[in-house]
Structures are given as C-alpha cells and as structure tokens.
Image (cartoon, rainbow over the protein chains, first blue to last red):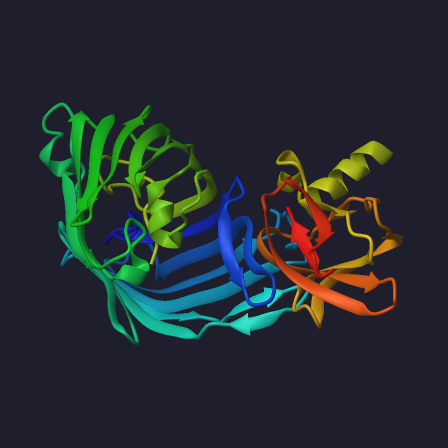
Amino acid sequence: MHRALHPRSMGYVDLAQFQTLSPGSRMEHAQFGRLEGFTEIRRATAVVMGPDSAATTRWGLEGSYQTGGWTSDLYLVSPPELNRQQSSWSAGLAGSSQDLSLYGAAGFHHASRTQWRGPAGYIDGPVSNGGWGFLRWKRGGLRALVDADGIQNGRLAWLPDPEAFRPQVRWFWPQVEGSLGWVRSDANPWSEGDAVAGDLRVPILDDRVMVRLDAGGDGFHFLQVGSSIDPQGMVGLDLTWAVRDDQAYPGARLRLPVFTLSVNDPDEWYAHGNSNRLVWSLRFVMTWEDGQTMYAPGRRPIPGEPSP
Amino acid sequence: MKIWSMLAVFCLQGCLLDLYGGDPRVQMRNRCGTYRVEELRAGDPDQPAWSRVFDVPVDSGKVSEVVDLPMAGDLRMSVRLVSVSGGDTVVPFALSTDVGGFVQVDVWEDAQRHPVLRY
C-alpha cells in the first residue's frame, strides 16, 4: 500500500521507468521462436484529493497508465522495430476522513491485448479487466486486486502509526508494520503456484534504520535493511538480498528527494514479475500532504511501495 | 557538433545491445558440391517474415558474408539452396544464439545428396 495513501494526504504523482539491463527476457513469438531481449516498462500514477488542505473530509480521483514490454533493445523515445507491447490503465475514486482516520479507494483496471510489432506482427492474448481497492483505518489496512478469474491477490496489513512521534520518547511500536495475504499463481513473482505471503518491518535504530523480512508459503523472499540519513526519510539507502528459484538477487535502492533509483528492487518485481538478473528502475515521486503527518512533522512517505 | 549529434541519435536509437556485442551474427559455409546457398530466412520457411539474400551466392567450398540477425534466442530459421540442376530446396533448422553471439552454419550433403546443416 503506497505510503502516500493516508487520511492527511492530498495525493501523489509517481512516474516510473523499469527496465532490464542484461539480455535474458525470453518471449515466445509465433513465427520466429523464443526470442531473447530486454524489458522496458513506463508507468505514470497520480492521486489527487480535494477540495483543499483545510478540509477534514476529502474526495479525489486516481489514474494510472502503463505501457511497455519486451524489446530487442532498450530505447529512449520509441521502441526498436521488433517489440512486444502491452498497455494498461486504471481509474478510480478515493475518499478520506481525518476525523474517522479513514482512507479508501477503489477503481477499475484494464489491460490491452499484447501486440507484437515489426516483422510478422500480430496481436496476442486476451484483454484483461479487473477491479482494485484498498482501505486504511487508523493502523489497519486492506488491499485487494480482482479480475474475471477471482481474487488475484489480497493483503491485510498493520501499518505505521500515522500520528507524529518523537524518537526520543518512543520509536519502536509506532513504526512496526506487517502484512499477510495471498497471491494467485499468475501474479506471484516468487514461485509458480498460489501462495500465502507476508512481510514484517521493524525499526532497529530510532527512525533511521529498519529491517524488513518478506516470505511466504513458498519460502524466503527477501531481507531488506533500510537506512535514512534524514529524519524525514527522504534520503536513504536500502539494501536487499532476495532469493528466487534458488538464485540470489542482491539489490539496492537509493532514495533522494523526489527521485528513487534502484537495482533489483523487489517491490518492482511485485508490480512486473520480471525474472531478469539485472533490473534497473527510476521513479519520480511527489506527495502532497499537510504538516503533521506520518511519523514526524514534515516527514514524507518512503517511495518505492507498490502502487495499485 | 557532428559527433554530439551522432551520439544523441545513437542514444535515442538504443545502445544497450551494443554493450553486449550487438545483434547476433550468422555465417554460412558451403561444404556440399551439388548446392549453392542463396538465402537465409527466419520464420515460416515458405513465407518468411525476415530473409537475407546473399550478395554473392555461396558456391561449394566458399563462405558467405556475415549476416546480422534482427533477433536473438531459439530461432526458427531456414536456408534456401539451389542445386546445380536449378531446383530450389528450402531446409528448415533451429538456431540458438545469444545477443552478441556468432554462429557458423555448415551445409553438407548426405549419402543420398540431401542437404544437411551442422552448427
């Protein structure tokens, strides 16, 4: 659940590019065979709430658009001649109430059929439609994605305390968070089957260092150690050790104001299910919120969380 | 100025492939006496989606120019041969190549003078 989705948030913008840096993305082409190449995906997501920052009850809109897929080479402007692309978008409504400590959003998601372009181009696969929703009440959270085949994944979460705290007085329990849920096989980036999955994050040094463990019924997923240089959590470094298919995937995520640069970020795998050995992502995240929010005055959420 | 504009175009067109050796390449070597290698194809052998006719047909004992393939992976390829009597023969084969890879494909003939590919 994106950390910018809480009752005091006015919304956020999240622009991301996700790509593999080594060849290995294998994709079946009806004419040419099983092709080796790269994956490049671009995504834009935004939530805008209103009417203004003084309102205790707000309503808003959510929208996102994603495009990309397999390519024979990476690109900056337009994909190379031979590529496989899929576009998807979502739209939804959001509402929040500070008096009730409540935030909720729900919407619709559509994914187009995949299209091979270039020599022997053709359209492949079915259209996919589904719904999504999440709810946050005080420290409790619920997220679910559904489609025509049923529930794709769902999570119950215990989220960080949204009220400001002073690290000198108490810093452990307000920051503890965890989740438990279930993911269907086609949406599971860690194994081939359906699985129960969950994660646990605990701070180990004030609001500066935290540890996150992610695992499920299919075994260990990853361990992440996150550190923040500033008390607002805008600048920091997260190091990850992930294991999938008996292979290790070390990763790193550098958080800067507004920008997040990462290599082998497991949160991106949740979104894209990529299995390449070397995956790079760049995200531009801006959130709008009033002064007293999240952990401490002026503290902003940590980017890098899965978006709906 | 010219160099910077070339670099800009290079980046816009994609550059990562070149870091791994570029497009995969294939070279044909003709080791049979009754066929001449004329064309390399990818996709359906009869209606290929991609093909490359050799500038100079590859006669017996000769090698072709090196051809850049537009894709890497486990490919469905075929080669069109022309016999000394003038008849065309298309021989399909599976070719596995990585990005930046190079494969040399030898064209032989068996005891019945049928074309056979080895790589």
